[in-house]
Length: 257
Image (tube, rainbow, N blue to C red; front, top):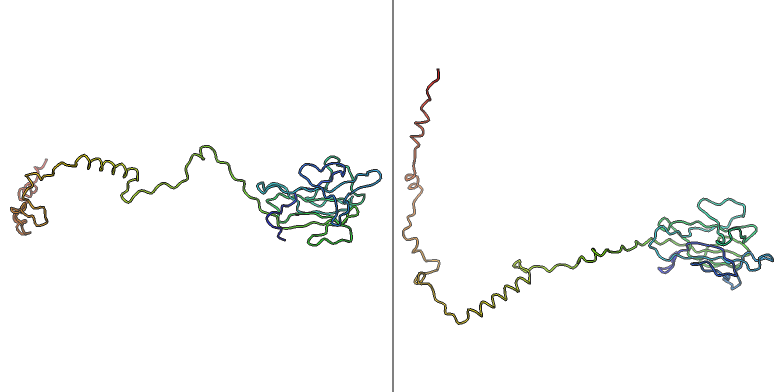
């Protein structure tokens, strides 16, 4: 059953005297679905009676927070099922709500719960509460609960230290195509602009050494005296037979007797 995102499972059940305020964090079921007072254990010796009080889960950050996974109504002297504990009055553990029956609950950590109890309603024994599961009868009332899939715990956000907060997560500016940051290019542009303003009005002349000489691709005057030799000319000019070396190597050293 889907109860929506705002629904929260129950975390506990207690009995509370009808003449006093519910324990902190709990709310009392003071009337049945028909509108009748829902007071348990009322008698001549105990005129005020008791209300069944419930608490709901405040947040999903603690996976170890217990939630109510199941509710049962047992005969007073019967043993408790494994994992169950009796619902009692925190101020008076010996207070009795019924002479024959008692209510018990099973608490399971939120992180391990598959299903949980989200709400409890009380009614007369002949009344039917749509959408709710009947747990049993006790103290003249029918007890109903609504179960659904337990929510998953939400990890608590970690607080960043002051050193971590000082770290910038912004993407650094990408360098320009030339590989220089924008600030460096800005400084270079400023210097070039200053240089142009300083050189304004100065005449430009070519050095006499370079006058009359072509700088084009057909300027071969510097290579006019260059002689291009063939491979045969190079081998003939640099032919060396190593005759002296071979003669020296052929001489045997004197023998030692």
